[in-house]
Amino acid sequence: MRKSPASLLLSALILGASLPLSASPLPAGFPPLPPQNMAVNQYVTQVNADRSITFRLFAPLAKQVRVLTGATAESCVPHAMAKEANGIWSFRSGVLPPGLYEYFFSVDGLRSIDTGTAWTKPQRQVNTSLVLVPGSILDVRHVPHGELRTLTWHSSQLQRERQVIVWTPPGYNGQGNALPVLYFYHGFGDTLRSGLDQGRVPEIMDNLLAEGKIKPMLVVMADTETDANGIIAEDYLPQERRKVFYPLNADAADRELMYEIIPLINQRFNVRHDAAGRALAGLSQGGYQALVSGMSHLDSFGALASLSGVTTTSVPNDKVAAQLAKPDAINRQLKKPYSGDRRARQHYRQRYCRAEKNTGAERREVRLPQLAKAGT
Image: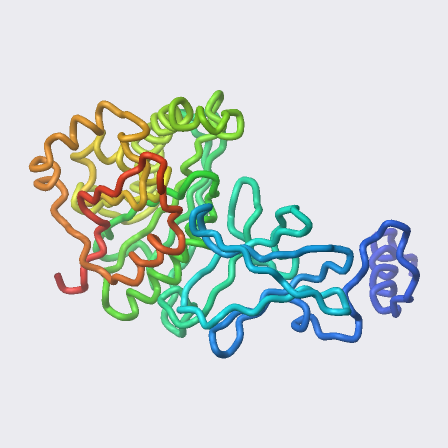
């Protein structure tokens, strides 16, 4: 029987995969490989049983390596790493509270992610790694789990393809009572996946539901950066971002939210359409977005949260300023104060949120997201 070219190729690939690899010499200029007589877990970063972290990096040609921990420039702390004879640099931290931590390496002055782990912080320019110390609400637990769905559409407002990620509670099938929705915006420089990989939204929601701390709801994670024509973050100098980029982007994202995202969710899912069944939240730049959209359409939301958010102090907005001048009207509309679990709030403020210190941002909480305790 004559074999087809495709079957011959497949046979060759299978044969090649089964042959032992020869220890051929590395080409000139190729960086050294890690020790072949050690298990991988001996030269990569790991969390220890006592909740300390041993940071490791294989860099035999480096002269100085430091690990820097912390989420902001103000909180970042450098730690000198010791070099072993086999080229592995290491530093062991003290015992740490459970939670998610950011870090990166400085290798002879070059900032580097941890090449020994797959867990990086979702960023438009990736330069930070993440490590989870277990024991908090951020853990993946043996509880019922919700599902994630990615929706893609062509945005007529932005003239480009756009996506949102939707978390639905365990067992959601579109039947029964319509569910409330929380719309969530990430911070500057982050990506659509930030709410998942760094924000730990699925884990937080799964665990709070299992503990009976919240009612079932949908969480819609939108992309704060619109990337519309003339509104691309990387095109602006740092000093121009708040003066020019933020207002332009916020206006475009607001149109996308009100004219496309909310109608899309209303169409695709069995959700409440009233203001009391709709919450809006964000952090940093996303907190500014929540303020702009929430205050511009106050009658469309029943709860609003700006977590370490940029405000009109540094990025003026007439609509937001006008609404904030009428706190009684705001509090009449936003009827559901935060009454959920403090651990989720702590994560977003201390781990995920980038505190806007010394940049003109202010902490002003009007109402926090609609995460009411079950039965209330």
